[in-house]
Amino acid sequence: MKSSNLMAWVVPVASAVLAFAGAVLGTYLAAKLDQSNWEQRFALEQRKSIFEKRVELMDKTASLLSRSPIMVGLQGNVDSETKKIYIQEGCLKDGGKPANCEMNFDRDVVERSAKERYSMNAELNSTLMLSGVYFGPKTNRVLHEVSADPWRATKDQRKRLLDAMSSELDYF
Image (tube, rainbow, N blue to C red):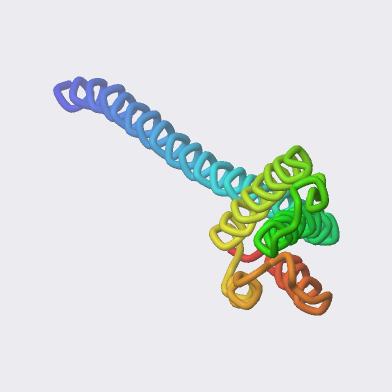
C-alpha cells in the first residue's frame, strides 16, 4: 500500500516538475529566438538606413559636381568686378580724372556671386565629408584625389568618384 501511495504522489509531482521545466525552457527559447530575431531586424534596418544615405549622398554628389560650370561663372563675375576696381585705381593713380576712370563697379553682383559660391562650397564640402564617412576605402581614395579643388575635378575624376560610390553602396 505504501508503494502505491508513493506512486500516487510521485507521478503527479514528476508531471508537474516536467511541465514547469518545459514551460520555463519554452519561454526561455522563445525569448532567445525573439531577441535574435530583433537583433537581425535591427541590423537589417541599420544596413537599409546606411544604404539609403549612401544613395542620397551619391545623388547629391553627382548633382553638385554637375554644377561646376555655375561655380566657374560665379567666380568669373567676382573676378570681372574686381578687375574693374583695379583698372579704376590704376587710372586714378596715373592722373586720370575720376569721371574718366569710373568703371561702374556692381557690388550687388559681387555680393550675390560670393554668397552663392559660399553656399555651394559649403554644400559640396559637407556632402564630400559625409561621403568619406559613409563609403569605404575605394571612395575615400578618389575623394582624396579630388579634395584639393572638387569644382575643377576632371570628367574622369568625377566618373571615378561616382563609380567608386556605386561599387560601395553595399559595402558593410
